[in-house]
Length: 81
Image (cartoon, rainbow, N blue to C red; front, side):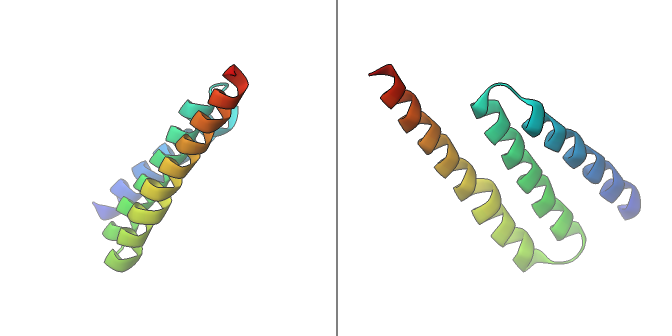
């Protein structure tokens, strides 16, 4: 059963990666990258690595996404001025 879940999560991660690459909207691309990281943290949890899963969720999914979105908002404010 775990094998099927790992395969499904891997396929969803690949689809989200293609969405992040080919997305025209930067915010949607950053959110897709965050989804990849969040799914990776779930995958690590299923593979019995809870410390790696927590680190990936906090840094990869949470902090990196927030920093990218903040940077995009600052760039858009500079362009609008």
